[in-house]
Length: 231
Image (cartoon, rainbow, N blue to C red; front, side, top):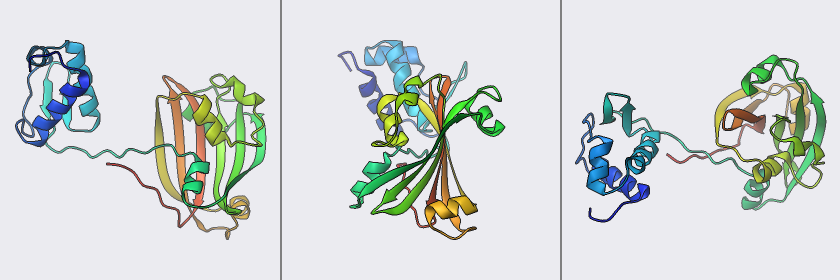
């Protein structure tokens, strides 16, 4: 390649060589300096391209050992954080939400540990119900780090949900998501209009802006809820 390459073009060419088995599983690829010379670009450009591919599990990068094509790539799923209003409206239903509880209080120790704050430190707790065509869709139990998002205390959440407000106003760099089944407590069953002990599809998400946690949320859906991811 004669002209200087962008990281995206380097990324695409490396990916092509992997997918066409020019570089085979388990094989070590040229080092960054050699690739930079071949592609007429800076090493930092090559480094970014390789880092992006490594995130997909196709490359195994180890310091001093070089970069190899993964022998058994691990498929990684990509989830978008949905705006509940948009998700419901895209399904052809009318969206509403109700703020059920709002208080600044100390969370359980497990939540403090997850967010990375001292036990006893107060966070904003918001409980809300998302509705589709006036029927319960999801019960949200959220904790917000006020140090990261002080303006959240000024929002009433009467016309916009915390889910949508945070996505519009607070940047995040990465997150952790867990999925599990849980039985509905009497309180959750009353909110979601289901029987106590019913199976609930539950999503627990922790989002970060750099090294600082922004919010910890648990979303509870009735058992017929579905989610999709891109591999």
